[in-house]
Each structure stands twice: as C-alpha cells, then as structure tokens.
Image 1: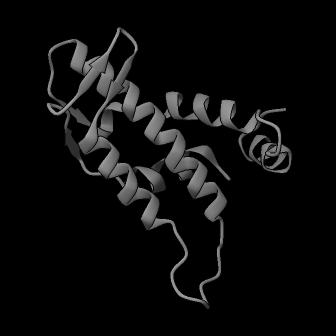
Image 2 (image 1 turned 180 degrees about the horizontal axis):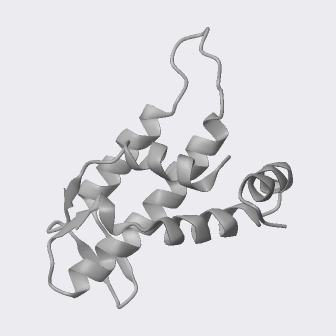
Length: 125
C-alpha cells in the first residue's frame, strides 16, 4: 500500500478539528483526550466489516493506518495542550510522522508480509 494514498484515505475518517479541552494529563508525557478517543472509535468503526457478505479489501491496511494516525494525532493533541491550545486539527498530522509510525508498526513481529509489501510500494528495502 502506498503510504500517501493510505494517509489521505485514513485522514478522511477523522474530523477536521477535535476539541481537546477535556484532557486529563498525567505527568509530562501521558494524557487522555476523551473526545479524541471518541473520534478514534468512529474511525475504527468506519473500517470494520459490515454484514456477513462484506469482503475485507485492504482493511488490514486501513486498520493499521487508523491506529498509526491516532498515535500521531494523540501526540499532536498532547503537544498542543501543553502549549495551551485546546484544539487539534487533522492537518496537524504530517505525512512524514504517519510514515514513521507505519514503519515502526510494521517492524513488529507478525507484520512481515505487510512490511515487505509496504516497503515495495514505497521504494524502501
């Protein structure tokens, strides 16, 4: 799967802006954003199979893409909150950050096949 194509596809599953004023911060690196988590739940539901005849086509890519986008979005939310901002925008998630998170996720055991396909589609080895 081409990273930019996946990024654009997954990005559309998220709201343009998310209010992060509901944050619960634990220390300097941990945070919980209920409205962002709700948006994540909705994005995950958008890539879930529907009905018994639904055929999953590239859904493992979209599932992984949603997870990686959430990780990046959460980091942006944390950074924004610590700077006194109470909103995060989906455009805050850069393609480069998304690619880095995809690469890290695909490095985990069990994703060998997908990693080879991803690297081939994105000119990596």
